[in-house]
Length: 182
Image 1 (cartoon, one colour):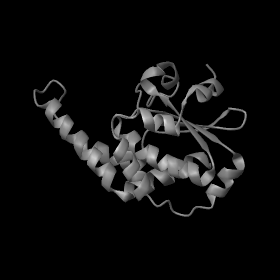
Image 2 (cartoon, one colour):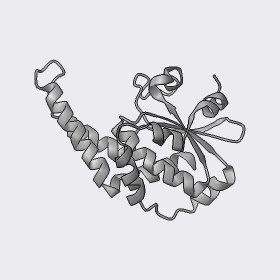
Image 3 (cartoon, helix red, strand yellow):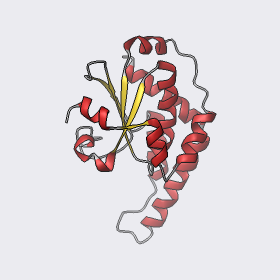
């Protein structure tokens, strides 16, 4: 399928939120608490009339935080956002693998009026990736009997940090704008 077909078949923001079973309230909480800084680049984005195809899933903590920030940017820049669920669109996510191997989400594909790709962002801002890497450095090997329990604790740590760290929200905001306004 083409980007146009993926976009046209993707969920509207309202439909994406309606189907959410995980992280719905948390995503809304971040959205409501995030005060997007003023940035002149938003006016340039408005003029470009971009759309965003967001590859996401509601169970993903990164998506919980990043989608809230993306929606604020989209509001300010008058960009239509549609959501393609990763797990039902493996052919799509496989075009945007992280490090060439991982189906990490969210991935935001910015497309112009002709449905041509102009930028791709995701799955994390640099400072968020640094936090995740640092927090997971002491995990035991995957074959260690305590790995699952300790890994779940690290996911909870990240989830809680994503909910309560405005510096991460600002980092995501800046990272997305830097990517799409190059």
